[in-house]
Image (tube, rainbow, N blue to C red; front, side, top):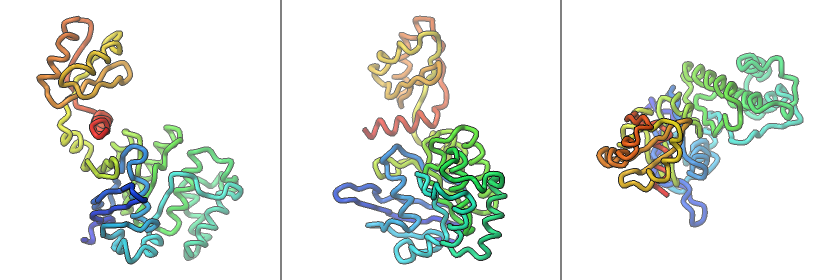
Length: 304
């Protein structure tokens, strides 16, 4: 562990009975960066995050969060990390301000009243501070949850699918705030299902069936996949899907908007599969860089 890492864990493993939920995961996140944590439902993202913030004991593995030992100092980690859960977990019959004042007392925040006031102002909650939490839309509940995470001035935020179920504008505003926090030196690990959000991160890690199978910048993960993608566009292109999926060398076919993405690892085999489509003269076919979604769907289908 060096002082340059907010998270530095190795071999992180968690079992529930006979099921291994997280299987020897290594993560090293430099301070001040925003990392995306991706994977399908049930892949082990939430379990990993709960181990990182000291809420779950790891069966195997070691490491540190903010310099605190994962095994021997979980209480120190809890006090210094901001954790935002998947589900809204605040009191719906209390106002925004009342919820934040309660959280400030729990964390024994010095000068809690002023800290609540400053946090409300920073996240644009002034005109809603007396509104009951249960009356808030998804986007405003998200802001309340983020405000609660920030009250005790953590240096690391662990956010578990924080934008699930909120509208695009609220998601955009949330990410602007995350990057503003990062510029102050705060480190962020955020799990998400949205590919556009993954592309906002400095680096991403992809976990599947409890195992970390890809990591790096978006461009590095795409390049590491070795995937080759052809785009097929034209009227009636969807009717080609069934035949292309059966063609040798075609590993993945998906419809995006008005075009098909046809992917695999053998360019020559893909060209042969697409030759009959070219011969029809009704479709435009060209090679393009695979999208991040192409890569992740392909990895998931391979695992299955």
